Amino acid sequence: MRAILFRLTVLGLAWLMLGGFRMAAVEEQGQQNLLYDVRGAFVSARADISRRLVADIDRLVDDSIRATFRQTSMPRAVLTIRIIDAGRLPLFIGARYRAKVMVEATAVGNGERIATGTFAVSVFAFDENAGDALLAARIATRIAREFSLEDNAPSTLATALFP
Image 1 (cartoon, rainbow, N blue to C red):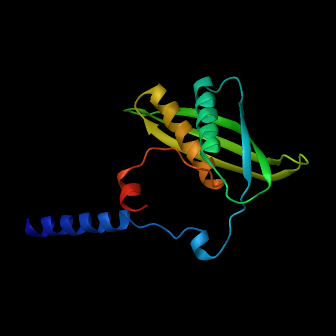
Image 2 (image 1 turned 135 degrees about the horizontal axis):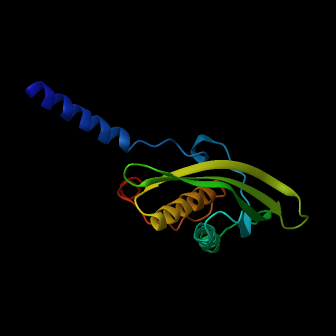
Image 3 (image 1 turned 180 degrees about the vertical axis):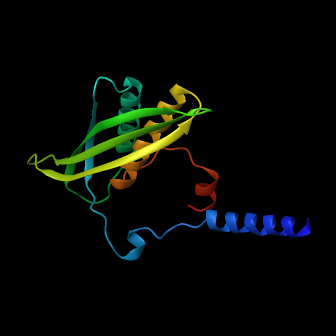
């Protein structure tokens, strides 16, 4: 019994220490991100994808764009966000929501495509409305991180302890 309690204690302490670990940011490693002055975003999707999901992504990304202020002049860009695929996988309790998203950055000055990327995200939720909201927040956070926008997401215990 003592051995099991000791092992669980060591496992718990190791989990806590590794849970606070974070990789060094790209700026800290000496590399520079490609930064753009994002002026706007447009979200599009097929008709079978939830309108609430599209509206929430649009609102959250727009909030991030408005909250971002650049000290130096950078190339201006507009984002086109396409939800390629979205789905719901019902589980025994709750459901797993997933989406595949394509983001294109287009230069404002000449209309040239600057960057294109595709990523997939998934979340678990008990309620369908909460699933769409969580999925939209995850997509908006990923876009904000990739384009160095201000993230308006609420802070968590981990971000409060390790900014």
